[in-house]
Amino acid sequence: MTEIIQQINELYAEAFRWYDPKRACPAIHVSFYPYVGINHTIRIREGQIFVRIGTICLEMPLACHKGLAYILVGKLLRKKIPVGARAVYSAYVKSDTIRLQAADNKRAKGRKVVTTSKGKVYDLDEIFESINRDYFRHAIEKPVLTWSARKTYRILGHHDATHDHITISTSLDSLDVPRYVVEYVVFHEMLHIAHPTKHVNGRRYNHTPAFKRDEQKFAYYQEAERWIERNVRKLKREAKR
Image (cartoon, rainbow, N blue to C red; front, top):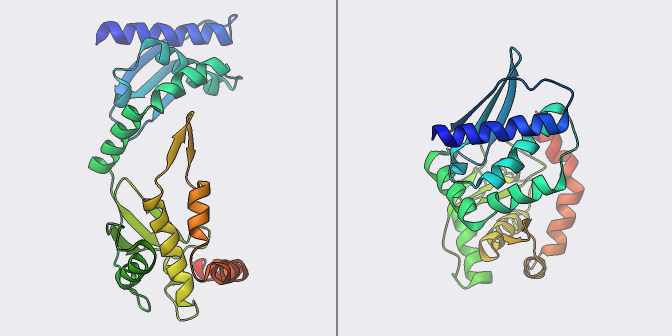
């Protein structure tokens, strides 16, 4: 481990010299830290540089560590980062192996706030069962369903694949909100289960053409979209009370 740290340390010194060849390279201290996800930090303290690399990258090739070094040092010095540095690092961290490992870490260490599926007006369990029957022929395995702890207006629903949760904004648990709107938001999040995120050339695609086609199969698609568009300001006011 000591030898690897020394090699990585030299990569950061190399990056500093590349960005600012006229400046003396400060003392650099590299260590690994058990971040939950794919996270890294670089800090200046008393003229010295402290780098923390997520332990998920313990086995990352030195070529990728070099890319990360140029990324972190570039951000620290506010310099333009070479395209090649981003490419070699991104190719590694966006690989299926690392993404799955990050998801496992999040599942093991992350915390998810769960309130209840039964709201004051609407029961998410009942709505899920109804939609699963009418649109998916009971093909969607039931996740944990919960109302959000706080009212929101920008995000009305969220599917967390890591924790297998669907969270619906408490802003919709109201007699002022038509049932079909709540059903539509639940339906939308269920589609994320039916159409998992696709990764192509390092990019994430959540709303694929197939997803969007299926979304429009909801019986009150147009009505729900219009209602949300017309009432977003009201939801915002309610959320900020």
